[in-house]
Length: 175
Image (cartoon, rainbow, N blue to C red; front, side, top):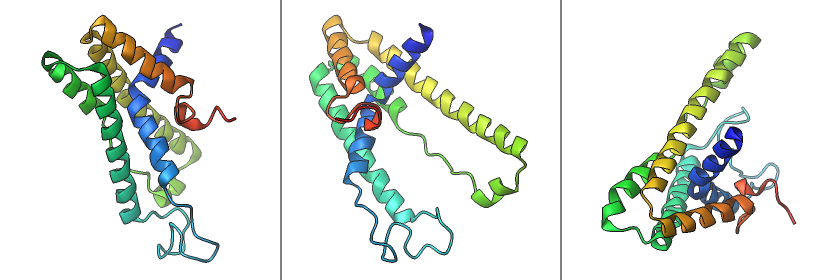
């Protein structure tokens, strides 16, 4: 039961971020034809190198979409001036934490046990960040009155059940 609650809270916290991420990804143009300019064009011979300008554009689109979704949620919840502090604290906790990608060359030099330890450390870091968001969501939820909690519950359930974008990034529900 505890795992269920944790997943439920993860969905609540991720509603704005994941929905916004899904929409942003849907708006990302597809890669160009083979041999033509694509997302990796001009980036050198190695696969997986990222264009910093494209990454920044993507990040900006994500932030814009998240702000829009949070604005819509704030209107639906009719946040009062007394709740502004709780709202600000919660939305600040939802902001994605920039992650530094592991250096592939350095990662390749590690032994298998060292790679496993590195992956476990990264997973623990991501889990700690998610726990912070979940705790912030629970705290914010307690600042809402009963009618606002009902709206918040409906909005998160809509997201988790599929909503407009297929729920949890659209990977599980097609049709």
